[in-house]
Amino acid sequence: MSIAAAIGDTIEDEPKPPPPSTNKGRKFTAYLLMLPGMLWLAIFFVIPLVALFMTSLQTPVPGGEVGQFQQTFSFSNYAETLTDDTYYIPLIRSFIYSGIATILALLIGYPLAYAIAFKGGKYRNLLLVMVIAPFFVSFILRTIAWRQILADEGPVVAVLRVIGVVGETGGIYPSAFAVIMGLTYNFLPFMTLPIYASLERVDPKLIEASGDLYAKPMTGFFKVTFPLSLPGVVAGTLLTFIPAAGDYVNAALLGRPSNTMIGNRIEYTFLSVNDYPTAAVLSFILMATILIMVLIYIRRVGTEDLV
Amino acid sequence: MSTSTGPAAGASAPVDTRPSAGQRFSAWFGRNAIKIYAFFAFVYLLLPVAYTFAFSFNDAGRTNLVWQGFTLENWLNPCGAPEVCGSVVNSIVVAAVVTAMATLLGTLIAFALVRHRFRGRATTNLLIFLPMATPEVVLGSSLLALFLNILIPLGFWTVVIAHIMFCISFVVVTVKARLASLDPRLEQAAMDLYATEWQAFRRITLPLVAPGIAAAALLAFSLSFDDFIITNFNSGQFTTFPKFVYVSATRGIPPQANVIATAMFIIALAIVLISQFAGKRKREA
Image (cartoon, rainbow over all chains, first blue to last red; front, side, top):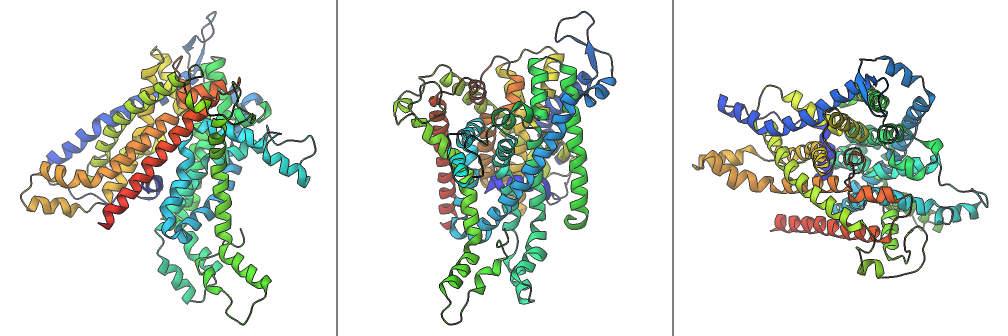
């Protein structure tokens, strides 16, 4: 499955070192091949980040209209935004929601990937297609489908009312639960595919060997299979956590105003209030926080088991 | 969870005389627990797809939230609701342009990375990886910051530019995976048989990498077609299909949106299944 391989390879594999180039001409060819694509990324990825940072330091033009700002290198924008509870609370909430969603996706996705890799038999590829099949339906429509499933008239609430988990008039949408469930759902394939990709490469003989050496199946799993699938787990958790932390569609469609995440704040501040500097500050803080968390995570998991 | 055990779980079936029904059930459950778990995971994954599909047949009129009755009207008249088909056409045109450009640019980078050794490989790899590790709100808002600062009007082209940017990395990674698994000796063998470098590329390398490039193109198309967050920041008045659905979510989504989504789902699934089937036959032949 090329998509699984692609996602799996983003983090775990460095390509084998290329054959040594024979002359300067080949080196020149390499730069020529890369030039258009890298130029595109430089102009439309790197420069925008610089523009975002510059925008985050702007202040309103005195006496100007809404949406008019000037460059004043006002670093106090950061302090002002970070101490404002309409901004820092959604920021913290984003990381809590996406953290829970990532753990849930791992708990669902790992056994799923395991079942496909080791019990799928000849249906493996078909099962993989079923994992990515939700991607073929619009992301927004799937989230709206959850709204219907979790609605007061929907099947889930009906069951919960019979069991007595939810009261006669109680519901589960809109709520923090619905938002987290939506996040878990939407990024579950990103968790499952890389884990599958690394489980698929585990040599079954290693597991047999652990059994021959009198390891119980559970011990064999935790000492052999799980450590070998760790690159997939790292890739999967990152591919779930990063987009979930920045998402605002789930919170907008499945939550209440009290469930807003930082993405909702950024979108609203940028597109509705037209307060570009504050929105830019929020974007930058989000990116920086994620980057720091990812680096710590890769270090902690990485140094002992990956390298 | 506790029963999602190691691989040898199936081997420990009881062989002693006449296990009781309870023992037999627990042994069966032990062997199949993970399959049952996977079954429920698939229900979770596919339930919203089934809902989307079912509600394309809902006799709903304007607000398609509660089941009103079965009708084929929506399927017979998919453009019946205003703006639906216009936004779909917009999405398809954007995705087609983006797929062509991103596949070309990304494939070239993948070739450079796998087949050439040059200064700055690490930086290049980092620059490919970063857009995939950046949340979409940040990608969308930073591009908007650029467009606002240099006063570029938002619309079709800004959406295309944004989509190409985030699709390139996915193309590079997909093509790179395929290219790295190829044996470079095949090309060398061709050149030993007096093929020129170009002939070896054209007759040996390209056909072998083609499935990877096709997969990358499909991925780029679906990423572009389904993108909402980045599009929402950079589209101005221009409407794509996901944006149309999101905007109409507050006042009610017409069932025609479900018809289009279901049709796209079937087409995409058919392409994937056919390519899998074709690939299998080729390998067996």
